[in-house]
Image (cartoon, rainbow over all chains, first blue to last red; front, side, top):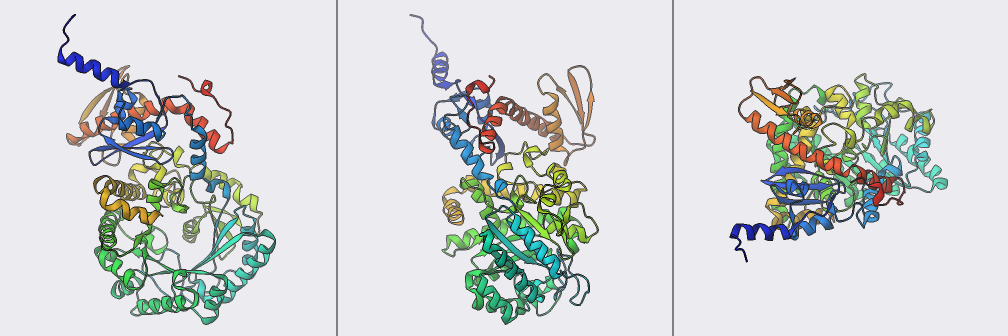
Length: 484
Length: 95
């Protein structure tokens, strides 16, 4: 009997344990923390040692725990079509169920008039006594009728501005009109009033309480920061008083706040988080400036984006530390991404969808009767560019949602078909944003390597995955509580 | 810095994707040197260019293999998810 060398025995043993008999299923990968992060079409993620993807592709996988995990999580399959393909298809459908639902978020820009003068205003607001920038009742009725034609069974009617609370009677009219039409349509309607909370009248609060209107306001941080952003010396005090008044009228949980990170904000992550805690909020959305409205004039967006990412990481670290100490507070953007990473469903967040949230999930009705893909696209129109104008409120629903402009926009709204996105492992956690691409890069298709939006999203999503890889025991219980 | 790439190892689509992914960091000129070889030149780039390019080429080649091998099953799974068609069989997948 011939003697075998140790190397030959080892080699034969390895061969017997190596499984070449499997098929690949669609997946992608990214290198993070010295590992390979494998992500499939369903958003399932497996963290594996470097070199794993090459071994998978070359059919050099050993029959070990990783192999079983790849098999059970739809990365590879013994059959050409996986035995549980029905489950795979159902999960894929669930993840993109918003496609079938129709536009659910309907934004009503009632006026451009505003009682504040924020330095970074996204909304192209005008001074409080500006004429000709308020929605007429006729346009409002047409917009409500269009909204009710959406096939979506659940609808959110969001009042924006300018400052919509300057027009309480118009809000009342809109809600009553929607309520009237809904007697036949039988949809579930949620109402959201986006307001600076500075001037909430008792009558408006009564209406909000009666119809369960959620009040969404802006709070940028401590008084000195908020006032500096708003260009006033008393805005913070008035907003905080407004928040308390709103909570008393509609309930504590019906009042939420958003912060926008100005350049000044970027040096104060902890102070901003502390302000939210101090004001009784248990969530915060760390939101970067958008390049629309007055904010579009800010210089050096690349520098701002990099600083924002650092700000975000510092604030998130502080929020994790607070949660570890037993103080529950959620960072909302992280929570949206983590839902996509850690749970089978999507997030419902229209800014991180593919196909994009525009038209598929959102329509915006401007004060002048223009119907747009989103709030951002009507902001673009205020700067003289109507590319994302779908029609007007007098048009039919089909001509708006399925018209030639919508078809043109549809060519750029699927990340699966965009260079740079289609090959990105983070695609199941991200989305397409043709409006942002158009406004910052001059065309709706966009250019991912130089897109600051892509840079920001990638940096944040990769940071969240890195935390899961490197500090799983510490962060996963916290992250899971955010996605429950 | 100039790197010569064998297109028999890295197909044109892989080179294109790798170059695209690096174009925020490098300005890259592509020149066909012969039937099989392509020169990628990044004027002014440091030695990191070669390492970054090779990493990108290798990664995109792996992605391309996965995409090619899974094209049919991906179509089938998406059709089943959104077209309501669950009548596909293994015969629909080309090996």
